[in-house]
Length: 154
Image (cartoon, rainbow, N blue to C red; front, side):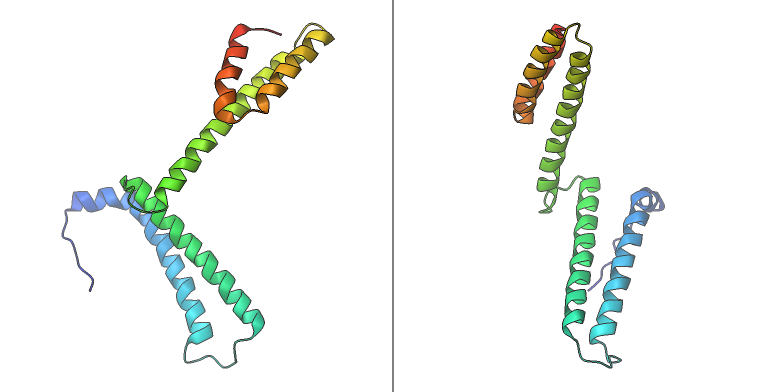
């Protein structure tokens, strides 16, 4: 049974900032899901479900499920709720992405410094250092790249 939780105009206004975006996405998912059901399983269906239809239904259900999953995760993130199963992997991946971005920027800075090295010999030596650090896992490479860049060698 649906329940209505009474609130205030102020609380509804605050929720509406992000809530409208989520409501629109959830409504779109619902419309597509309902249209799929009606087309394939409703009383107006006039043809048997063929192999092609089964593949399309599977793909559509997968896309709709993925969209629903993402909306639930985004809403949980906005509310600061980590009890939803998709939040922890998302946060872990976001941290890994931040490290990857930081590492790539440091490697780019080191490559710029490498190109500006005065001699071919110093460029090759610096390149060997940068290549070795770039081959390390991000969490290991970042402090070493920072140290290398901090030395100002080239």
